[in-house]
Amino acid sequence: GQNIDQPTEMTATEGAIVQINCTYQTSGFNGLFWYQQHAGEAPTFLSYNVLDGLEEKGRFSSFLSRSKGYSYLLLKELQMKDSASYLCAVQLGYSTLTFGKGTMLLVSP
Amino acid sequence: GAVVSQHPSWVICKSGTSVKIECRSLDFQATTMFWYRQFPKQSLMLMATSNEGSKATYEQGVEKDKFLINHASLTLSTLTVTSAHPEDSSFYICSAKLLTLLGGVQETQYFGPGTRLLVL
Image (cartoon, rainbow over all chains, first blue to last red; front, top):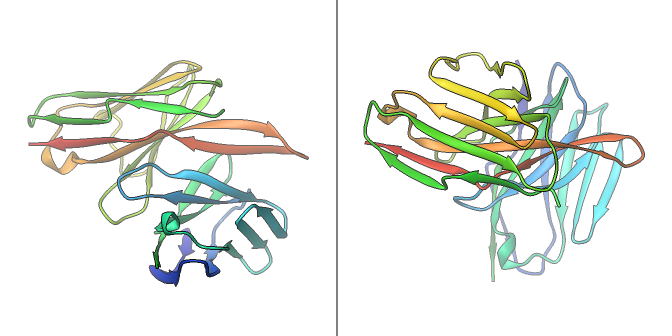
């Protein structure tokens, strides 16, 4: 089966940096996505990695190591509005995404 | 760009009735759309892949006769929950696949705002 692991919860302080890790063991791999999901809302796209290395987008960066089956999402200069669930998803085969259970991030003042 | 809408945003219905949910890609054409279900405090579970002009592909354990999917055009897919029961109450989310060329072909799924279904 497919296995995608993320921490269940994390807490951080406003203005700080937080790293959310994701490890995966899947039968295929065509890329890894990170989505943000606020409570009661649908996920919004944050980043996509298919090659090893770091992709930076403003306050958000995502890293991938395919050989290690590992990715992380780095959030800098945390803001209260960053409190949300962060979903790691692996693209298997043709288009299909398999999601991890998500990491609930709570940002406190 | 890459906006996906869903309608209705929420629905309450009696047990035994059917409910139709629409998913539209507003500013791009999507040959492939996806339907997910999310129960409280759980992650998204893929129900089916909807391909324009052909039959949907259902994930294991999802009843195709209960969850009818129609992808009649490049911008619209519908999910009909037939004879809904309380255990079908959930958050249903669709996504549409967008292909972009960024140093290679990148497929990204953009999600609709979701439909919250409550079956009494």
